[in-house]
Amino acid sequence: MTTEPADRHAIATNKHTPGPWTVEGFTGDEHRRAELTIESPYGQIASVVSENCDIDAQIMADAALMAAAPDLLRAAVGVCNSHLFQGSHDCRMEPLIEKLRQAIHKAITTS
Image (tube, rainbow, N blue to C red; front, top):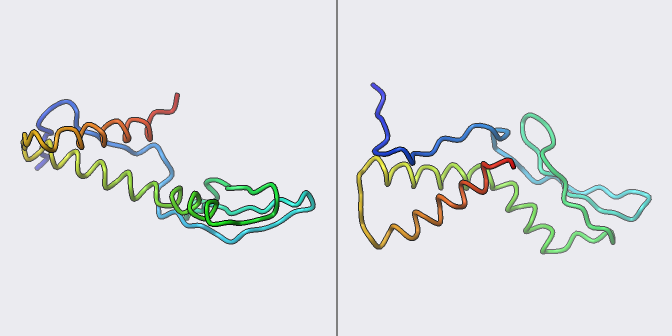
């Protein structure tokens, strides 16, 4: 049995490369760049590059955030859809749900 969403704002996503995504070790090159890669079971997703051959805390944090993106998106969609399916109208939750919807839209919009 399929349950229909409570309204037309239910969110489904499936255009990105499925997770899990992981941060892989860095490589350097002759141009003194260091690179961390974000990998999935389907191949490389992205690179985080440091032009001065340093992998510092900020670059590691950026790469970790990117690697967590599929999990964060799935959690945000789950919260929004759960909110819709339960028919909850707690006014205190509405600003948070709207922020989640905006973040999801930003994550799934390709143009």
